[in-house]
Image 1 (cartoon, rainbow, N blue to C red):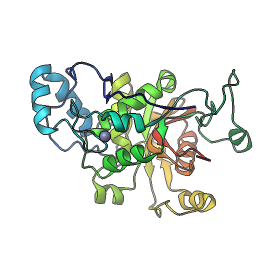
Image 2: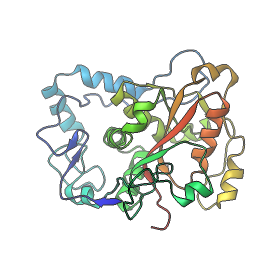
Image 3: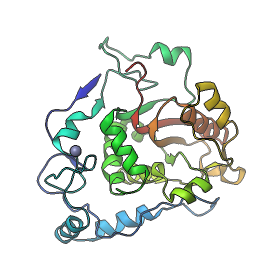
Image 4: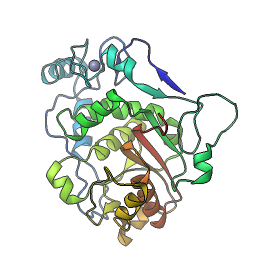
Length: 299
Ligand SMILES: [Zn+2]
C-alpha cells in the first residue's frame, strides 16, 4: 500500500520536530566514500564516516549554527525554503509515495488490498529473486527521482543523511537481521569520473544508524558495463554477467554472514540480483536488499 503523506516535514530525525538536534555536520569536507581498491584486510571506512564522527563531536548548538550557514534551510528535493536544513518541504514530503504493508514479503512491492498473513506476490513466486527480501522507502515518483538525482550527482551530499535515515526506518526488519552492510559498487572508472558512489554514502548512513559494520570493498565491479538504462531485462542480465565479484581473499569477510545490500534505486532488479549472486557465491549466508526508492511494476 502506498501512503501519500499528510502535510508534514521530513527531517533526518523523523517527522518535523523542534530543532535538528546534535547530529549535524560542521565540516564541509568532501564526504566521498572510497569504494576503490581491494582492501582485503583493513576494515573499510569512508570519509562519510569520519564526517559523521566529526559531527557528533560538535556541541549541538554550534554545529547547528554552522550547518545553517553551510546548508541554508531549503528543501532537499526542490530547493524551496523550509524551517530547517536537510529536510523536505511539506509539498515534497506529501508527494513521496511511502511504501507500507501490506507488501510482498520477498519483493517489497505494495499490494492494493490487505488480505492478512504473510504474502508473496505472484511475481516473486514465478521468478524468485536471488536476494531474500527487498524493502524501499518509496515508489520511484517525481520527488524520489529528484532526490536520487541530486544525491547521485553530488551537489547535495547531505542528502545521504536524510535518505539514509529514512532507509534505516523502512528497513528496520532487515537491519535487525543483518550482520554486515554492503553497497552496490561502481566500477572504479565510473567512480573516478563521478567521484561519488551514492550507494556507498547511503550504506554508511544506514550502517551508522544501527551501529553495524559497512564493507565498501568486499563486493567489486571487476568489469565495466554499459549503462543499464534502455536495456531489456535479458540484456541487463547479460550486461552484468561476471561483472560483480567477491575476491577470493575477501571471502572471509562475508562467509556465513547475512548481508544487507544497499542501493539508491531498484528498477528491474538485475543489478541487485547480480550483486546478491556474487555475495552468495562469496560465502554470504543470505542477502537482503534495501533501497531508497523502487520502481513499482504496473504503476
Ligand atoms: Zn520540496
